[in-house]
Structures are given as structure tokens and as C-alpha cells.
Length: 141
Image (cartoon, rainbow, N blue to C red; front, side, top):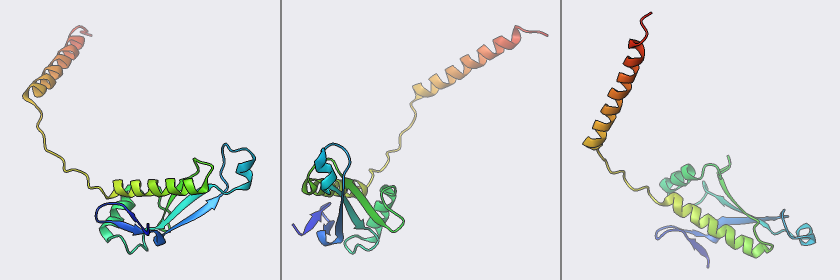
């Protein structure tokens, strides 16, 4: 596997993705203190030749919290005690995030308020107005 398939038209070569391993927190006993199992996936969005400018804009908008000021997307995985497994999980998360970011939102269908709903709203307003009139009519100071 030399590229990661995101959608039917977008595939990112694994050469554009880099990984950093670090010591992970959480369960694992002494094993956690000696091995670097936490994996951070780094993807330079701005420098990627695999994505079009519009794709980059969609990703930037959808994942702005995960993209640093340098334009690098970060995905962290430390859920398992295996660096290899965490790397695979990070790749899956990365692909899923990009898939969601690149999926266009369905167009909004225009709808109308029903006649019954309009009548209910007007009736509620009339009832509320009558209640307020009743309050002021009772006090003649």
C-alpha cells in the first residue's frame, strides 16, 4: 500500500504523511515508561500536491481545530500498547476525517410553514395578549 485511499477521486501517498512516536500515558505499568507507543500523524496540508485548492479549503474549514498555524494536520493515537497498532488507528482516523471533510453537504430543501402551524402561532399570540389585557384591566390606579 503506497497510497491511502480517501474517496473515489482522492488518494494521498504515504510519503506525504509522517509519524512521530512518543511516550504514552495511561495504563501499561513499567512498559509505558520504556517504550514510545503514542503516535502522532503529521500531514502538511498546504504543501500537499495530492489535493486541489478547493479540497484544501474544505479540509481547512472542517478541521481548523486540528491544523496548526504552520498548516500541518495532527492526528494522535495512544489507545493501545503497540506503536504499530496506534499508527494504523491514526491512519484510519486521518482517512475518516478527510472523508467527512471532503463530502459535500446535501443542498437544503426549501420548506414552508403549514397553515395549521401559522394558525396555532397566531392563536397563541392572541391568547397571550388577552392575558396581558386582563392583568392591566383589573388594576385601575
